[in-house]
Amino acid sequence: MAVALPEVVEELLSEMAAAVRDSARIPDELLLSLEFVFGSSAIQALDLVDRESVTLISSPSGRRVYQVLGSSGKTYTCLASCHYCSCPAFSFSVLRKSDSLLCKHLLAIYLSQLLRNCQQLHVSDKQLTDLLMEDTRRIKGAAGTWTSKTEA
Image 1 (cartoon, rainbow, N blue to C red):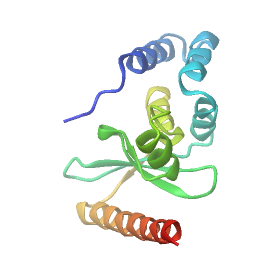
Image 2 (image 1 turned 90 degrees about the vertical axis):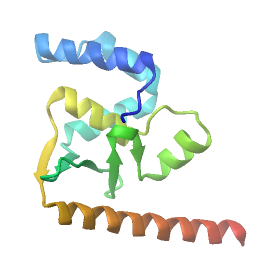
Image 3 (image 1 turned 180 degrees about the vertical axis):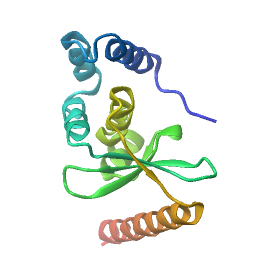
């Protein structure tokens, strides 16, 4: 079951997709709206899209996961179906503080989809499982490190 974005975001992305279909570009007023809703994350997400940093990884079973090469050089795993990203900004700004709707990586995914600027990688089900398990271990390791630092 997919989790819905707030209506204003859905509408904005829908208008942007229509503009791209009609004229192959996003009008300035929609870019300004994007920046109004997402702040500096909008510009950063557009930069990630321009750098072709978004990859859709799919398997024969239909599983789909995205990886975004962040501006820091780290790769983050994202699940667009439930609006999840493995980056620290998502954990802090979206989940803990609730002061952002999405991190720049998730926004880059949505923008790359509508701009049709998403890299594609097809892997076996086992490869995708291994990738997700590796990512889970990395996240747990980072969380353990973070927890021990805050307890000290």
